[in-house]
Amino acid sequence: MTQQIPTLQWQGDIEGVLVLLDQKLLPAKTELIVCNDVDQVWIAIQELSVRGAPAIGIAAAYAVCLGAQVALDTELQPMQQRVGQVCDYLAESRPTAVNLTWALARMRQVADQATDCGPRELAQALLSEAQAIHAEDAEMCKSIGRHGADLLAEFPVGAGVLTHCNAGALATGGQGTALSVIFELAERGKQPRVWVDETRPLLQGARLTTWELMQREIECTLICDSAAAHVMAAGQIQAVITGADRIAVNGDAANKIGTYGVALLARSHGIPFYIAAPTSTFDMAIATGNEIPIEQRSGQEVVQGFGSTTAPAGVAVYNPAFDVTPAELITGIITERGIVATPTRDRIEALVGRNE
Ligand SMILES: CSC[C@H]1O[C@H](OP(=O)(O)O)[C@H](O)[C@@H]1O
Image 1: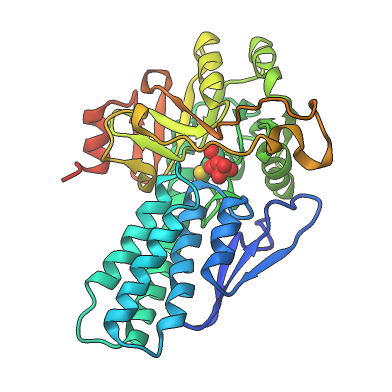
Image 2 (image 1 turned 90 degrees about the vertical axis):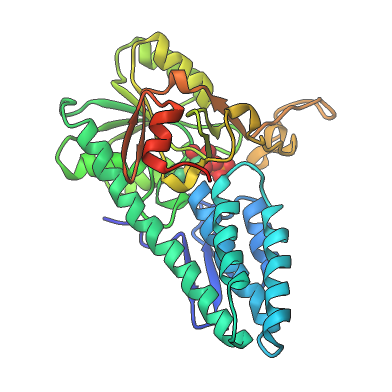
């Protein structure tokens, strides 16, 4: 069974709207946000109503189409200027997921290369590009699932897989990255037993990953982030698979805070640690993970999350939303083009291409 309500959907023509499934409210409520303008999408990205590296990029691409709507009755050049302004604005919504700036660069290129056309023709070209980014991501998700399931083909039926945060359909334009592998394993009758880190502070694992797995009737067990070592030591985990938000040329990968710790635990327990990500998540312009900008979020998410106060008023809080797992802790990166085993710069450039 697939997710009943799309994570994000463009409705209409160049004067249409972007409809988002509000992930802040899941699983308690299934509510939609109808976005008519760029600001609404900017806020939705910043507040994680829409989240996950590929989904952020796709939402931003559609937001450019919303931004173009105010310039439909001008000329080509004002429309091109509008697109540039909107791309600059959206790029500021969240810093870590490279898919955001990758998608905006594609939209900006469409505008910059436009000649001999009117604003409405450019608006149509922008919508076609956003829809292409969305459709390509859906195909990449399926391909990641196939490559990942092929990689784990020898795993026994009922093998334990641990995942951290949410890298499912809710984080992408398709069926997910890490969860796509799990969905494909289930499709092939491997009956994966999924262990889900709750993933503090915003609980993407507890709220979203379990929701997706239970919708598909895949066995899952929710654990506190601090229980992962214990579960590994008990021999319950045969592989770890997570998503990623930005991967440097050398294979260092940024993902939700806590991923680095899970990778260290996996290494110490002799468990393979895989990252599943499309090639659009590779930042070929940065050499190592040290250059990946790490989003710092409000301390309120830690001490006031989900309605309960969990610390004394005024306590200092440090709330990085991501951390970086060094390439040497990554057994392989599962992409839509295949697997980068023991990721190195040469192997990544061979698969992704060199940054010219
Ligand atoms: C398929 S990318 C999913 C990736 O994005 C999440 O971050 P956030 O929920 O803050 O957008 C997390 O790092 C996931 O692994």
